Image 1 (cartoon, rainbow, N blue to C red):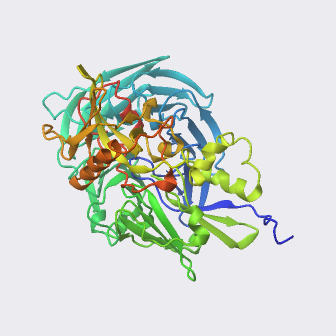
Image 2 (cartoon, rainbow, N blue to C red):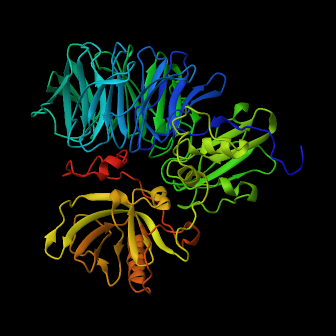
Length: 620
């Protein structure tokens, strides 16, 4: 081999660090082989804790946001986000696709659930109507579908004792569904005077037409048929995010960081407070819980996985952790020791073993600045430092070159994995992969810095803001005056709106909106608006008027100054989408959570499409 030729090596995915707990729930289970199944970014992971090994399902083309386990605990269903999302049913042992379910939803698939006989699958979409679909998943066809609710649905389950009965719950509602042939009919639950009408976060069915549900205030609501029968008050100190039913009884997990076990009649058995554990901490919030025999799994908001032995419940074991919300800004490896360190917007610096198969666990995270740029970046790894909102890390090894190891941040989709193969071999990913046919431009955007689309373009400021459109003309109120979370970019004399930073880099506007001109615009603090803090007002010359909410006074001041500066700049011919040039960015504020008000904001309507993109809710 000549010195200039590339090595004949092929990288394969060897290890994935992290677990997605942020903005997700009920996504961590034991399989029939006593392995753990969960997901992170666009990868389904099967983890064998005894052998400390992982297997991967790579059939998705975008972020996975929902997961369900078949009653036989061998097959797994996972749903993704995206414009044309689909459900993959796959074998947890072989990690091969069994069935692919398409054309049922748009925007994303929020919830999944297998029927007790395993023959049917229910899915709930993130579309404006929160569509509920019943699938004959082995045939890949929809048996029935119906509009779910005008607001978000957080959980859905089948009644194990009545094959054609389902229950769904969400923002201030619970619905009981009946399936008759191809007709799916809902009936709303009656709260009456037994309990407050409030958001229901999780649900599980029991015998004798009884249903248990976890509420936002920490109570468990007990339903008989359609009627609220009684409440178990203060079951948790805060919202109950996960409710798991099994042969042993029920397990609940909440924002208070506690796991509670209940018997088959929902009588309390024991309580486990993970905040008091050796690796616990204040603010720990449980998003997923699974109880199988004498073992309990708990997934947290901050992307940790704990395993608890019931007999030794005071000694929970931390078996996985990763960064949670925000972007991963920096990565480096130790020059001599097998260690890697990463920094993220979640204000933590995490240090982990670079050779995970040795059995070493990730170390506890350490507090860091809100933007972790201070972590040094080795020149040899600078191309691997990506900014991504859901970015754990993965380790890639070459089977023929044991000394070759590459640790890179993992993008929300498997594009990065495909491009590693393409970069090493000079050939595209294997045929048949859902992402194999994606355009080269989109693939490049996930792995390499975006090229400037406009010479001399300068981005003054960019970040997520809450936006409300007040007026769409001088004497005309806006038709939709709900609050939306959008990624705002000030570029030259324009302000563009995007779904997220990735969309901004690719020049894809939010809902195809044209950037607004800031020339002679008036921007000031909205002193007359009292419902929210840190709100400023933007008045345009064409009569449009917007309200924006920043996270604090400092950020609000920065935006007002930037808009004033942009309005007074010399006029420059705008680009078609005003796409900023990443290389010329002057300052970037940390991204806020993309769904900070999805669970709690009242008055949302079906036409409020933004919340369908907001994957999951704000922390409770």
